[in-house]
Image (cartoon, rainbow, N blue to C red; front, side, top):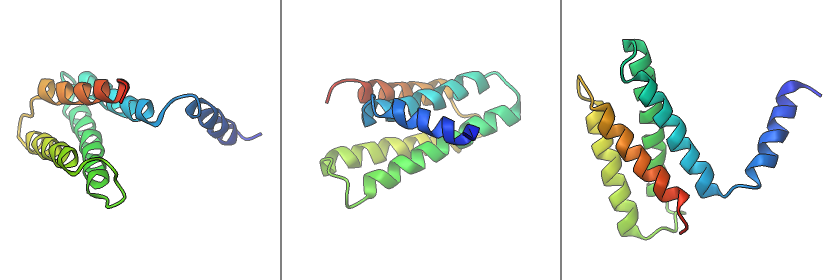
Length: 115
């Protein structure tokens, strides 16, 4: 069996034992790990971590604006507002990595808790 097929099956098996919310929390945690590592690293590592964080928050904004999203509109609007604040912070010449990490950590913890 090719390695990629084996890896995909292992991922699918693991994913069925964890809720979607927990998997989403892991995305925030993973992005946070990159931000933490890049905070005091080379400029290219910082740019890469910020680009990953930007993609995460763009995806979140898209999900919040989807007509298929069943979350309450007010909550979705609040999450989009947070995302816009994160985007503005990342646009600064010297973004505050501590702030970005704290926001992502808060979302990861929220997703990990019971609904």
